[in-house]
Length: 370
Image (tube, rainbow, N blue to C red; front, side, top):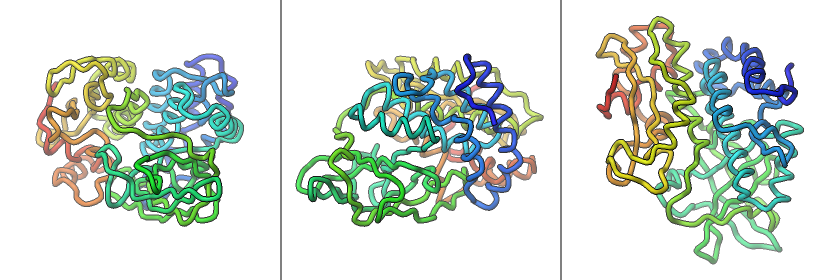
């Protein structure tokens, strides 16, 4: 097994990763049909030390750039979209926390060492059954009660991607007796921490986005890692791993259709656009989902299986448009009628890919461009 830390440049790491993920392709359909979690893929990625590549060098990682991260994610997505989408959250969050020095130094340093040395995995746990995504502004129902110099957490989180294999959960919770909301670092294996296997969707079925259950979980004072405030959030370029995953995961499923000439480098450059293409207004602090329009390749069954580029975006001036994440994933309740047409036209496309390709944007957002 290749150790990705031994390679000195980006091209060498890309070629090595292609060999590392080759076996993912053979298992992708199996896990998609069964809705099972690909534990073997993550064992492979841990052994290759992939999880530590985005950790800044001062914490022992390789400190790779955003562009390289996206290009490596693209390679994984071509082999297995669910695995790429899952690991992408860890890669981006570790990169952002380290570069922005969000946590106290010694807390991040401890986690980073675990990531670099043993391939530990981390993800946020923020969505909830009642309030949905925190982007909607609701106060979490999960609570953190001060007790004995620390906190006791109780609650339930949904859409906790990577839940079956995570070592760390970053849990948002309302602090009892205050108006504050904070993030808490919760280690897997603590008493009261368990995962409820609820993930059974139509698309991205192997991401392990199960529910996280917290029952009287005792934490230390230092596990309160971040106070969460209101107002606009700064740009988060690492979230571009989402469009990169969808772009790349569809490519091998449609070998007979020529793909438009676009690369992850162009997606990364689009993140710097200061103008929202939906409302055509300038933004001093463009959001990567709002004013930096990501381009997806979507199958349009009504156009003879031609691949078109779809610009899906969301901004305050046009809030009717679904966000990229909500429209492209988590199709728990319904499936668009054109998904069956896609599968009928090309049997090689799995149910997961067909749903992804024909989800809400393809049926409700008519922003087709050539």
